[in-house]
Image 1 (cartoon, protein in one colour):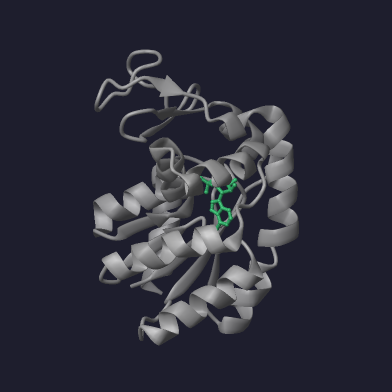
Image 2 (cartoon, rainbow, N blue to C red):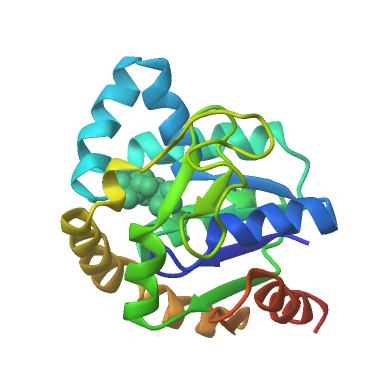
Amino acid sequence: MNIVLFGPPGVGKGTQSALLVKKLGMVHISTGDLLRSSVKEGGALGLKAKSYMDRGELVPDEIVLEMLVGAINRGNGNFVLDGFPRTVAQARALDGLLESRKIKLNRALFMEIDDLTLKERLTGRRVCRECGAVYHVKFEPPKVEGKCDSCSGALYQRKDDSEEVIGVRLATYRKETAPLKDYYEKAGILKAVDCDGDSMVVFGRLEKFLKN
Ligand code: AMP
């Protein structure tokens, strides 16, 4: 089973992907994570990507696509794509990429939630600098403030989770990513998942859509 998760920033794509990996053994491909690793490495590609990410804008397709092709080639299917595609042009590029490898995309899960909840989720999000685990100061706090439960790494707030950048990311989402609903509806693989509530409750809803 190969799936795409899409929805506004902060809807819980990363959290649900981690559950899909843990419970169903899927392979997580997150273009956001790939980009952040490349920024951490400090190469030319990462440096170029960083300026877009810090502003909350989309990184140019040629950079993201190169990373995506690498990740798809390394894997053996059974993937959950998180954060890609983010535009209809990227969805078309993905279709071409998968077609040439005879890989089928089984579902595109649209994760939906209201704006107020989104903003609260994003501003309270904290990420482990070492292992990338995601917390929330209110909804999923670590046992010790500022420290990761699993590796004791320091938690930080992503630069693009600041209130100002969140506005840009949401606007980008509405303009560029929301049209994917139509795209995948026409392809006959769209399912909309209500993402309000506890992460396990949301996972239960999501799992149902993978079976039916
Ligand atoms: P995410 O972790 O998915 O929220 O992504 C963080 C940032 O990485 C986004 O705000 C974009 O700047 C960039 N990014 C991630 N995925 C893509 C993509 N498919 N296309 C363009 N930019 C992306």
